[in-house]
Structures are given as structure tokens and as C-alpha cells.
Image (cartoon, rainbow, N blue to C red; front, side, top):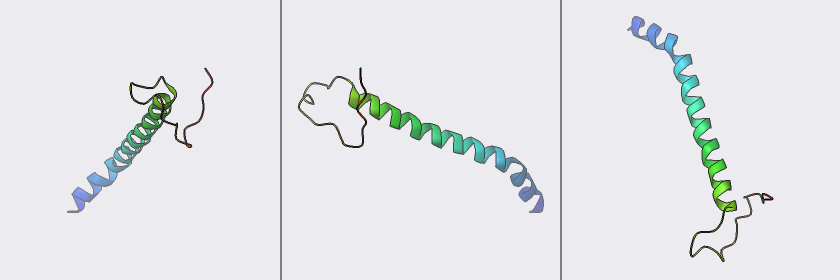
Length: 60
């Protein structure tokens, strides 16, 4: 059992770092994509909808 714990503790920092980077990257991509979508031309049927307050206005 102690050998397994040693093996896990040696590889844990790399795995934790990789997981953290993946999660932060996914959240950043989702946020940036949402802002870009809300600031783009509206799809058919969405022309008269208002932009949410949390989405910043980007000047073109």
C-alpha cells in the first residue's frame, strides 16, 4: 500500500497542474466565446432580443 501512495504522490503534482490548466482553459474559452457570440450579428429570430447586462459592449 505504501508503494502505491508513493507512486501517486510523485505523479500527483503533474496531474493536478494539467487538470487545473484544462479547467481554467475551458472556462476562459467558454467565456470568450459567449462574449463573441453575444456581440456578433444576431441569428434569425434573435434580432430584437436584448444583450445580457454582464456581457460587455465591444466597439467595432
